[in-house]
Image (cartoon, rainbow, N blue to C red; front, side):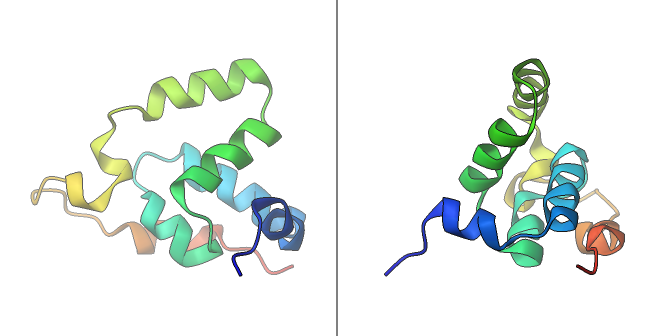
Length: 95
């Protein structure tokens, strides 16, 4: 049986929620990396952002993320010389 989003969100400590928000705002951290680090899918990250941010901040974030190739590994240009796992390493807090 799949775990509901609300149950999964309840298992995250405040530091994890903060880290997800920071990674979601970063252009270079893909949704795939967030899922590997915290276990939240892209749709769950969107739900978390909607829940945690003010409405105007959420709308600003969604507008910024739509069509951004760097948020999905498969859409990235091969010329991009960074690895998002390394970028995200410093975002994982100890709770």
